Amino acid sequence: MRTADMKKVPRQPSLFRSRRGAAANVDELVPLAAESLDVDDMTEVMADSHEKGPGAHITSLTENGDMFKDIPKEVQGTECGYGSCKPQCLQRLNNPKCLLVFLSVFAMLQGFVVNGINNVNTSSIERRFHLPSSQVGIISSSYDLSAAILGILISYYGSGQNKARWLWIFAVVMGLGSFIMSLPHFTTDLYEWGQNVTIGCRKDGQQESCYRDSALQAYLYVLILGQFLHGLGGTTLYTVGVSYIDDSVPAESSALYIGVMYAFATLGPALGYIIGGQMLNVYVDFNRVDSSRVSITPEDPRWVGAWWVSFLVGSSAFLMIAVPISMYGVELPTAKTVRETRVSEMHGDDGTYVSSLAGHSRSLRNLPIALLQIIRIPPFLPIALAGASEGIITSGFATFMPKYIQNQFGVTAGWASMLTGFMVVPGAAGGQFTGGYIAKKLQLKVQGCLRCRHHRLYYLPYHGCCTLDQVQV
Image (cartoon, rainbow, N blue to C red; front, top):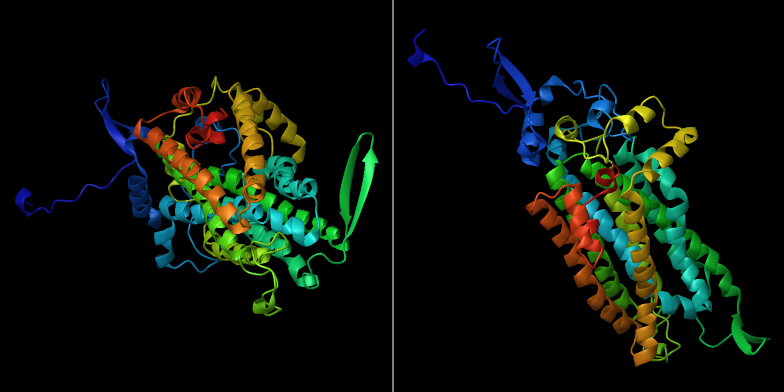
């Protein structure tokens, strides 16, 4: 056959680069560097090799330098769908960009409920259930309390299992928590301002304190339960969800992806302040009484708005976002390529951390071993303390700032909530996205993120640069 008659075969993308051997004069295949691949390239490569099936060999635990990933020899369930129903149209969603969209919406809903409407409704819940500010603060603290108690267990077990399954289950849990938060409205009588309330006072030394005695105060525990469930879903999102994204994209793209997700998480409170603030201008029992016959207005200190509507909206939204997340498999098709090309950035990576845990199963008995390994990592404790310091400032500010503005300047609860959102959200969302973009643009590794953190006064942009999986090590 003549050369002119031969058809030119297009060159297929490859995960390997050919290198000419010096002595044997043969071609040697060597893996490409992680920096030479992006998400689109990996998606194309995995699509070309999809017909070969998901049973390809995957690099071992020790070779990848990740001591917390339970990577099986053969990965099953990387396709998108339900059970045996995995149509080809759903495979178009089986990529990191679509996953980022769904997790960003999840993060936005989490911010909408936990950091938005929950803070907006502080003064209304106090007035409706006759609760002092100290007890309302316990409701907000229940979120952090559940995350602190069970967050370690969730991240320990969830990081090595089917991450998508953990995410959609706890999205449903957050939906249940939001429904429980709205439940007291349907189980109580109509709101009657200034009635059936007993005020008692007691004197401790030179100080006299007064308190309200009402049967409605028992609903405090219902609200705490709902917020506790929110904490379970939130800690799953920011541990398992971030790890899911980081496992699916190259190291140089991970910061931007996570920065976008955190930026959406800070847009959630903005929606919460706006929507929740507007609902506070609607009378609390509008579904049971004629609002036109209500003799008080939102400017009246006795007014209670429809605080429960926003929780019902959040509950429905959580259930809706759980549906597309549940379609994803054990991992994305690009995850295999990421593992084979990513260079370990583990602190002092000499193989000792990996070898000490490689033979242990992921059981509760081995949890102290994993915790000890993390504590021994020098950057971990300063980063954890930085996050705790940020939480001390922002949690109290976001919870009680709307109430302070309302009482100090004599404005309505809805307008006070919107003013708080205007102050907090732009800087937080801008910092998250900017931090991720800078890390992506400058190709910052772990050391670069740490130096970037050293020169920044605000913690959030750095938080978008490095994930726990990157710094752990």
